[in-house]
Image 1 (tube, rainbow, N blue to C red):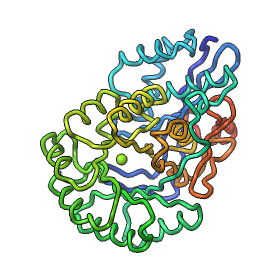
Image 2 (tube, rainbow, N blue to C red):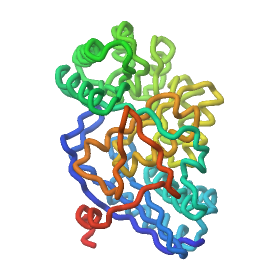
Image 3 (cartoon, protein in one colour):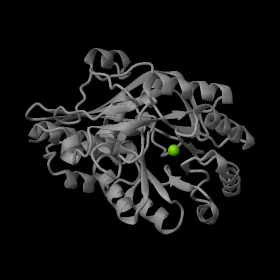
Length: 368
Ligand SMILES: [Mg+2]
């Protein structure tokens, strides 16, 4: 099997409502659909989300990197030589989402070629995974109403609350309102997207000790090295690293230097291959992981559930899988369904998702 064509297709889908968080906002998904075709007619796909406020990648930048740096060595390569492809991509620094997308499309081809789902090839630990829903910035009343809607309509009982606003009392008030409304049995955790200083984060962690929340994610900038170490040492709650750990090496550094006590794994930035290495490192060190969401489309979420449900250590906690519901539409032929608070892992060969060509024609912006 040889790769014969690599297509990076820009498309825009409006969000139902703007998503607001401490490091940015998003009112439209300006993503890139990657399609890799082989000489035996297979097509591997992946969704690549540009997140300039997190990794510096843009829609046009992703297309340029694929067409000018990656396509030349992908063309003619056998997708089964996955580690050759990963080593060649590693010669380019950064560009995490672009590299993650290539890896996912390659696994899609491998799965289709052997007639097995990627979920099964990765280990197929359980058929489905619990879903956690992210609640963005709003008034406490609106945040409670959103969480109650997702719990009542979809059976979701885990919520990640976006925090990181100033004054911190805004967030503390919202978090107390959520705990009071949702009761003691719902999982709650917070994500500040570097919105606070280490001392502000420590104040919130102590102030919210009675709310019983599981994690505080990326509360302050990990580049504030000493502040971050002080916070991890003193915080009564586990500190999750997310955007500070876009690669295996970053995970190792943050865990070994006291910058974090749990890790968010996102297939959108470490694909399946590097996510496996991160998962193994964390499991060996006794560190919790959360399957995170890079504001993934439905196609991106297929990759997260495929990976998250495949391993014991990544399926212990609810995975962040509901952001695709905020998108105005999706490119998948078959929609992902959240039922009883869970999503089932695809069972068809490869990634288990196909593109609706008429929708792609409608949303692509390259005039093709
Ligand atoms: Mg995060």
